[in-house]
Amino acid sequence: MIERVGDILALSDFYETSSWGYDSTEMYLNTAVKLETELKPEELLAVTQEIEREIGRRGKTVNGKYQDRIIDIDVLLYDDLMMRTPKLTIPHPLLHRRIFVLQPLFEIAPDVVHPVLKKTIADIYHLMSEHDLRN
Image (cartoon, rainbow, N blue to C red; front, side, top):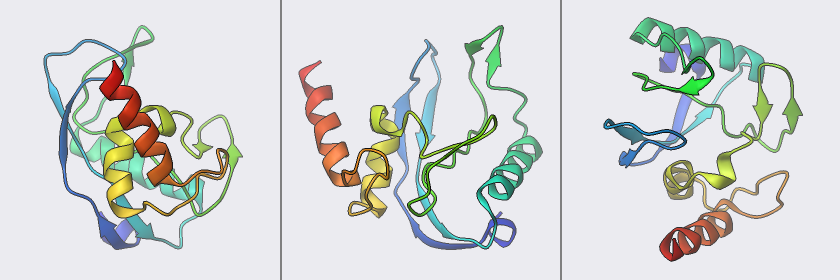
């Protein structure tokens, strides 16, 4: 994969979590990768989707409902870019609401500023961690 998307600058630990947004008996492994790439965001998305298909991913939803999938690669941030197209939104629109995304991202990029919220990943992660502890 790396030769297709760029160079890895940082890789978080892997975190095992339960499903989010639907019920499943399966556990998920989550990690975050910081890349240096020459690909434009849309090109990066196309390559990561191709990799997903090669690994065996068939779909994200059935009848509009989430289902288990073998792999799910998301483009969370791309420098300080903000964009919204029919295929890609950067920053990822649910990044700040998903602790399973924030935890590994916090590990490798705590000082990165979310371009919409204007808060660091560390600040967002700590706010979400506190919220999760209260629920």
